Length: 302
Ligand code: SF4
Image 1 (tube, helix red, strand yellow):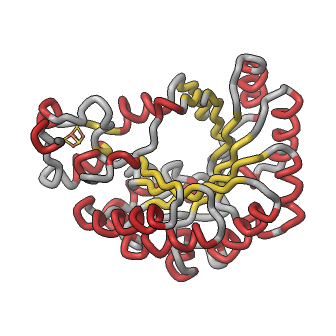
Image 2 (cartoon, helix red, strand yellow):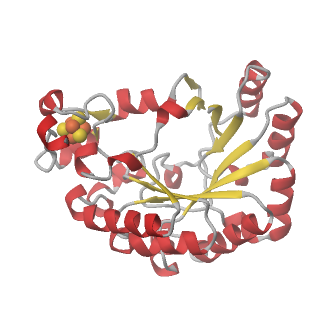
């Protein structure tokens, strides 16, 4: 799929302890509507199949519904929305957003219980609102993909988080490795688990989804940290996203992530996954190091 992706706001109504945008510390939004509109106009009619909106929390922009109208008027076929789901606890609002063209909601679900999710989001009630929001999205016939970021506060709950998302009717569940920038970097030692600590829980979560016949993917993991589960990594070759991020335009989001947010080590040169693997988030490599990452030899891969 060829899609546009737009960072609509730096601001959020939650305060997640690992926010990569650093929304909890942003006082004012840097995103100007004029620039968003220009980006949309410049790319209209060029075969983009969807516009993916994200933030911060895109729905808290006062002009969010107007932006959805603008996207539709410019002829883009559909909209994907990355959201914490909180505003969709109101059915009326969920209905309006679906009617304005959002067909896929990508909802952050970082806990299987309110205790865990609200502790991560530092926002009381955020779990209950997201759960209600997903129910409303499904009742309205929209597709839902959940995204769960693995952190110190939730990794032992990961299989239960995936079960909950599937019980709620998610069409696709995704597990993301913690991207150690923004607020996650400020809180690095409080939020970042080691890959070897989380591995059994990640595998159990995937096994459960597979047993249920559900679509499950992973994102941001070094391949050597998930032996035997590499096939579940999101295939970015199938998804090309051109992104407007503040004043920058990134022609290919995933190449940017590989080139600027992750690093490789000498050992990667001899690894069979070197071509596909993006490596390790650079702050993780700097603070925790490489001792748990071992290159996979051709003999081990067969
Ligand atoms: S050794 Fe390097 S290239 Fe191989 S899977 Fe690990 S991080 Fe990726």
